[in-house]
Length: 150
Image (tube, rainbow, N blue to C red; front, side, top):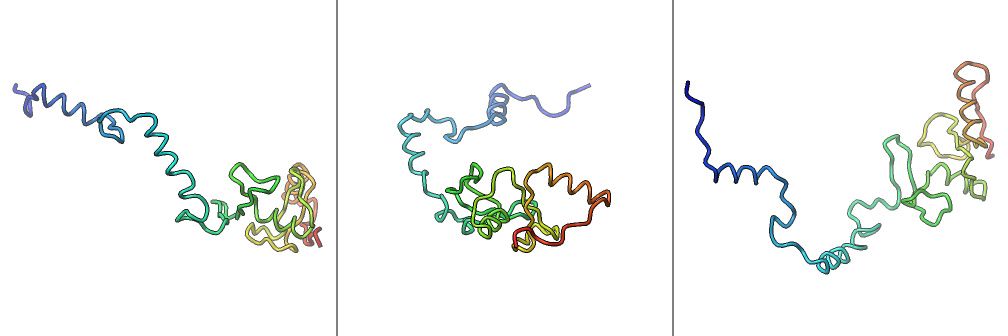
């Protein structure tokens, strides 16, 4: 029984193997000298940072869970990228002090985008916040209706 298709030549096999492999950005040319790589990286430093970036939104970033982050790299509790939660910032601005790392901001109405001071409640620890939610689920305690910031 004859084989289907045509028989590949050695040259054709070699070319198809090359095309299947990953080709680098310089497409198989000579290796780039280290001083050229340094020069290329220096050109990009600061080019698309903050205001120069086409995707810059004024320092406000919305996470996938609808919470907003604010760019404040000088804040003592900002994350590694320099952002803090807007709800924490609003509570700090109203209280006139920085919140401690263990203090948790709870949204009374459950809307994470509503960062008004009358909607925020400060728990002293994550465990206290978790206990509150468990007690609410089991109907052992009434839901919080008034902010402790006011």
